[in-house]
Image (cartoon, rainbow, N blue to C red; front, side, top):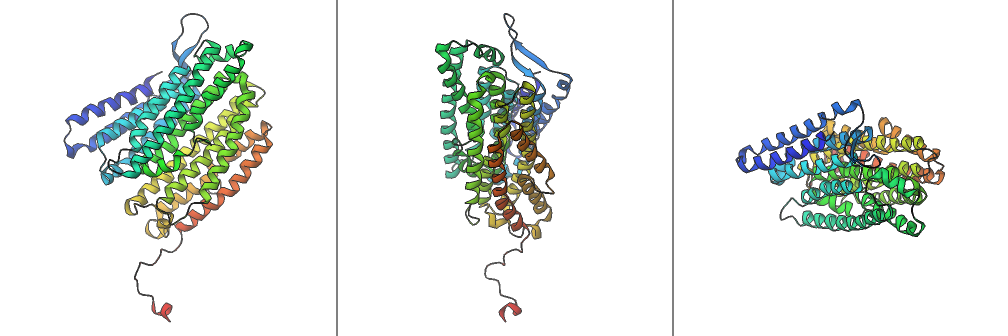
Length: 460
């Protein structure tokens, strides 16, 4: 049951030790070793498909386990390990171009992936917090790995300070929940909260809200989103892609576990809170994306960063809907919508960042204006980016994006959240502007070179 995160962790240790002995001209072998470790960890999911497996279970009292490899955990682990694998493949050229230390990079990537793979299978609050930190701490170092780069150092510091603050608040919430229930296992917390002592009810409510703060930060939900654009700009592009996909998967899986499994009896507290967060997040993300100036340095990465904030708002909608569900089956169906949307978003966003990484090799400033005429220079890259942007917008031929948005929209309507469905529909229309604007730039004629002589007809 614990094979996938364990294999990723062992591969990270193996890479770290091998880095001590390999000469400089053979450092590229570390990358292929890391890729092999991630592929092996993903393959270890196959034997687990035959049914739920649990381990680290209590031997006395009520049955409760700290680790469960159920369908939800396996799907998120596949997303995490697949995202880390694609990030690794994108990183080979970045390591050479930016002169990053290979051994440290691959060790940090594998360590973060191991923590991210552990989190969706965690079934007690202590393991959840540890998995969250194991996934996050190496990510801070990955963002700041460009030594001597001011942007990189500033991004890592902002990311670190914001994350530590959110984690401290979350730990305070966990301590409140433990004080009110006497347990850290999610299923036992759910039982205890149904008959909590009236004198501890306010403490339990505060614990529920504060525990959600840490996961809201990881999902980049408003108002915990300010670190996103600067962190994505300061990080190497493959690392920004990793944070946008794997970091979000970690946050959303943790948020789902604590709300649906641990706090179902307090759905009247977290349901409306998550619904308001969803509306604010998608609106703030789209509003900021509209304000990006095409000629500004790193405007392409900033646009993807704000787009990821808006997409986080869409991902929060089914979780809010689960808070209004009449039965556990309806809640499971709503959570399935979030997982389906997350899978679509992961594949499409990684593809968009892959093209951004390709363009960054020739245009390090990565402005939106640098993409003008991309179809004339690199037709395959332009067509791929155009398809990914249309998927994010939810337009044909990106049918996968349209299907995912309809699934999330129907989850809100079924839960009676008509106002949230209207807010989402308006935001989807607003987002069309900047997605289509970027797509149109790809197929425009390239700008004439500076100082080029005008053609005779033009001169006339």
